[in-house]
Image: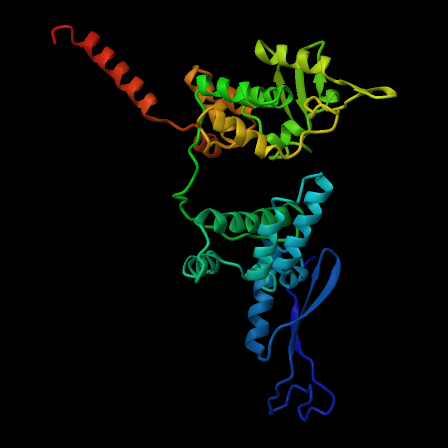
Length: 369
């Protein structure tokens, strides 16, 4: 039986008020509540007045009977604790902290000492307003990355049953969201200016919409050449979900080409077989090649493009080719429709083609016109 609990006042030594029922004097000694939860007797301080104790006991009983109570430790949990748990989770998962570390640091600086149960949407909006009005204002996208990190930490806490609720996390509109994409003809010019190993990475990314981080971790143990499949575990995907795609057409030719490239010859040393599908020529995984990418883009006269724009372009190519939305998501690895729509960007060419189709339809529907 959970019972209804009880409350009492714990008097300090030397307090003039006794614990007898006929005591007429009041004191400032702390009130406490006691109740049973999961077979254990728990006690908590509940304030300076009997009214505070009654209210806290009532809230506790309501939460326990509603199966929302996780214990008094939830009240003591700070946002800094949640962020530390997120760091540990990412390390155990094998994810790189390089991109997440600045956002975790900023979130800890602004929210770390606050109780997790006290965070509200209003508090987050106040932080956003302060950052936008600062002497050196942050960009909305930068602020959103910090808020997104907070949301990720709270979701992990819910999953670990350390929190019973989480607030709404309002996000700012990002007016500076990138909309870069690469047309097929331009893409061929870029790959022609890249070293062959990096050109293969770019071609795989352009065909599938995969991220550079996922491609850099792709190993031959993930490739089934017999059944022509690539299956990557959740440890190397951003959303933590395993992913499988078939190898057809250019992708199959590319994988076969990479299979021949897995042997790395070394002077006066045995031939080395690289475990990585994409490597930089010496068998080691591809690293930072932004300078080589920028040089190739300059040669193609599109110097503002990023390698990540290939992901956006790959998604749009699939949509233009008439690939079903769910199938395209399964190839690119997008988890939600909202994120997929963010990458499925239209431009003037798409709009012109749409209007031509409308003209064609109207012309056929109204031959008299």
